[in-house]
Length: 176
Image 1 (cartoon, rainbow, N blue to C red):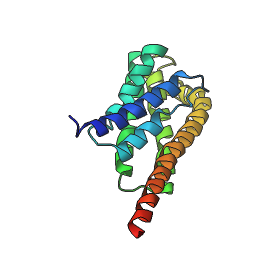
Image 2 (image 1 turned 135 degrees about the vertical axis):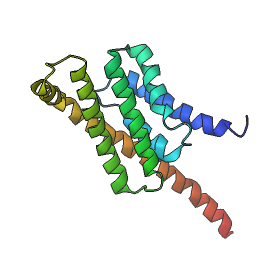
Image 3 (image 1 turned 120 degrees about the vertical axis):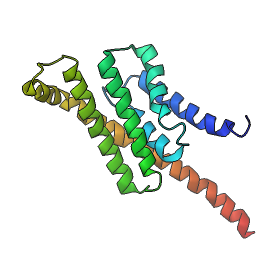
Image 4 (image 1 turned 180 degrees about the horizontal axis):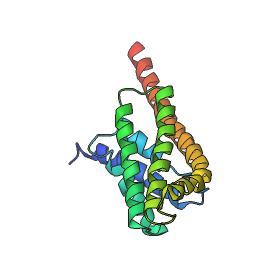
């Protein structure tokens, strides 16, 4: 059990932070879930990475409330896909790729969830209703993009900075 403890603490900490940020007041769709899924996919064990967004969303939804099952499945599923995108980033981490993945995550979430809102019957079930669903979602896309870029930069940046700070003392000791 001791050898698995460190790999359980990191995901639990990340989930806890994501749930807390989701429960605190924030602009609509300005949340850390996509960034957490990208980060988890890029840095954590592939065993836990796809579960991070599902657990964080579910725990948050216990407090916030549940909603249309079709829309819920699309939200949860889109973040699992974002976690897989993070796993793709694992060996391709660069500022450009991380930013592109954050933007791609926002667009993926927008396309999937607005389609689900349309399919759930919120708009006319014809091409004009689907278009209306996407048009009505545009104000949320702005916040989604801003939140995903902010939290992704925060998670990846803080982690990489921490790695550099930890490596510097180790390098200094080896020079003695």
